[in-house]
Amino acid sequence: MTGSAAPLGQPDPAGLAEPVLELREVTKAYPGEPPTQVLHGIDLTVRRGELLAIVGPSGSGKSTLLNLIGTLDRPTEGTVVVTGHDVSTLRDADLSALRAREIGFVFQQFFLLSGLSAIDNVADGLLYTGLALRERRARAEEALERVGLSHRLHHNPEKLSGGERQRVAVARALVGRPSVVLADEPTGNLDSRSSAAIVALLHQLHEEGATIVVITHDREIAASLPRQIEIRDGHVVSDSAAAVA
Ligand code: ADP
Image (tube, rainbow, N blue to C red):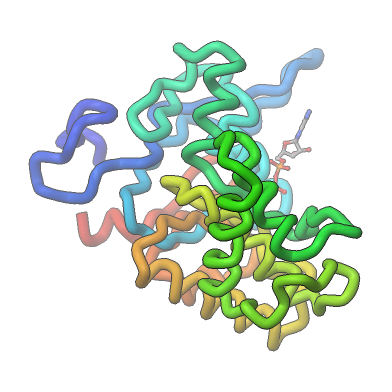
C-alpha cells in the first residue's frame, strides 16, 4: 500500500494534493515494567482538503494517535511529518511554533475562556502571530461569520448553547488558517441536533477547502464523512481511501 508513495513531504507524482500529515511505521509505548505498547506500526497519509474520521472504540489508541499527529507527543519509533516537517528533527520551541501555525484543535470540552466574549476567545487563537489586537479581532469576526455566529460576537461562553460554544471553538481553530484541523470527539458533549449541526458545519468547511481530521468513537459520525480510518488495539484495521488509491 505504501510501495508507490512519493518520498515524505514531496508532491505526489499522480497529481494528488500534497500531504499535510504523514505517519510511517509509527509506534508508541508508554514507559513502565513492562512498557505499554499502544500503537503498532501506523501508516497514514492525510492530504490537503480531506475530511476524514479516525474511528475506534474506547482504548483503541485514538487519543495517543491524536497527540502524535497534533505534535503534542513524539513517537517511540517511526516518522511523523507535518506539512513536510519531520517532527523528530525539531526542537521543542520549533515544534510549538509549527503546531501553532499549522494545526487547529477542537476538543469535546470546548476549552473556551469564561468571562471573555466569543470574539476575544477566537482572537486568542491568533496570539502567536503577533498581529495587533484590532486585526486579531477583525479576523475573529470573519471566522465567527464563517461558522454562522455573526449574531453572537459579544456573548460570553456562559450565555451560549453547547452547539454555539463548539462553533466558537471551531472558529478559534480556523482563524489562523491552519493546514489541518484536528477535532477530538467534537460532538461528544452535544445533543443529537447540535451534533448534526456541527457535522454539517465540518462538511461546509471542507467544501470551502479546510482539511479536517475527526477523532471519534461514533461510527455513525464516521460513516457520514468522506473517508474513515478504523483503529483497533493500536492498529489501522481499515482505511476507506485504500479502496480508491
Ligand atoms: P482511546 O483514545 O481510543 O480511548 P487511548 O489512546 O486513550 O485510547 O488509550 C489507548 C491505551 O493506552 C489504553 O489501554 C490506555 O490505558 C493506554 N494509555 C493511554 N495513555 C497512557 C499513559 N500515559 N500511560 C500508560 N498507558 C496509557
